[in-house]
Structure formats: C-alpha cells, structure tokens
Amino acid sequence: MLQWIGNAGAGPRLGMAVSKRAAGNAVKRNRVRRLIRESFRLRRAEMPAVDILVTARAGAGLASNAEIFTSLGRLWQEIPGPQ
Image (cartoon, rainbow, N blue to C red; front, side):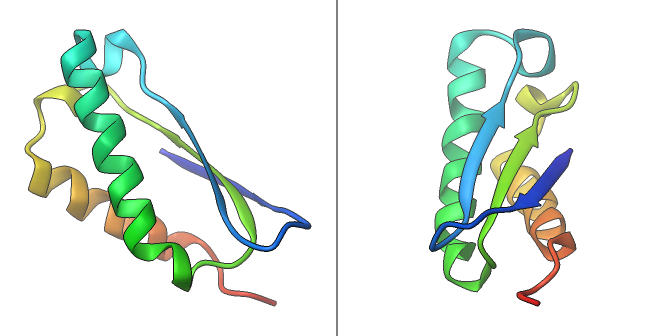
C-alpha cells in the first residue's frame, strides 16, 4: 500500500512500515525493506517532492524479489507528477 503527501523539501522522502505479520521474521522484513529502498532509489529522480509511506501487506515476505519490484513499479506510477 502506498500513501503520499506533498512536502516543501527539495525532493521525495521515503518511509516504510514492514510488520512482522506482513513479512515474517527479521530476515524477511529486512529483505523487503532493502527491496523497497532500492526500488525507490532507482525511481527517485522521476518523483516530485513528496513524502511517501510504503506499508507492506500480508504475504510480502513470501513474494519473490521480482514480484516486489513489479508491484512497487506500479505503485510509484500512481504518484502524480509535479504540479
């Protein structure tokens, strides 16, 4: 799940909520967090100045890296461009 709100800063900022219930043990949660950060890093230049909160949903720890990247790619597309 993705939520965003505009900010007055110079660029986009990322926040994450990856719970034990959504992703499992610490190893799985950290893998999901690393994938979220890497996907954000690759798309950061294209994003407007917004604060973004990514909340992992149930089953995120079981998804493959490719599935997570694909899902995040679709979510980043939902963020409106600069006004």
